[in-house]
Image (cartoon, rainbow, N blue to C red; front, side, top):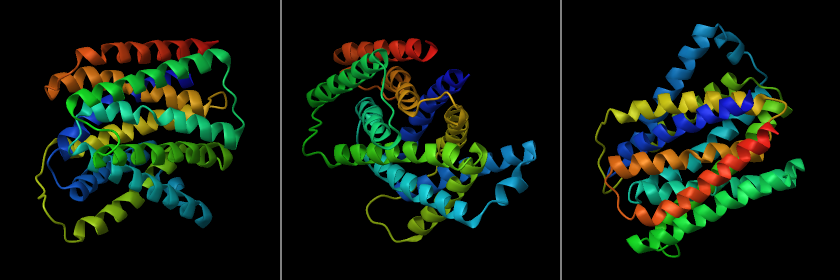
Length: 289
């Protein structure tokens, strides 16, 4: 069951990436983040109200509130770096960088949770990582220097912080047993407060313009995270495999992003895309086995 949840999260996450790029391109970062996060928090609130779990989400220990707000800080920093990178990077370059996240998550899972991948899982992970490396080399043909481009380093920073958040999720959901919807509501609410303060500060250069994709980002995020948290909550789920499959949203992002934003150099990225597809197929077979 957890595999179905994570595949659903993968599809929704790709649509989320496209809306995120459309929202922040040549736009002020913090007001965009505030609008997107607020819409996601409102969607999570409506979900809890419909399910009748809103009161339970509020009635949690103070220690848990502090831990959930810590997640808000981690994710808030990750999204800030990612959005700043997306302002200038082509989405077909930014998405493969984000797809390297499972490498960092796997290393953390091995160190913190003693998760040792099976040979089949390791083969799938290697294929995805190699595909991401090929994407990075292809980006150099578009004038994106991975050694000196500030946006590239911000994209990597956002990815690493996102992997830290994925590992932290396992502690919150499995270690402490906090319901997934409660985690989602509290950390999105905390991020709204963070971005409200940041958006109120004076900023230079870029002005803010409202786009219909901004609230859609938050709604898609809430839907994707709800699927993801349901997968992570499963006792049989492995955090390293979950993260790898979820990152495969880069495949849909590649196709849709290339068409929507009219990006170039797509043919040279085809082999890298095939490697990622092969890796995801192997991971799915390994998970079912």
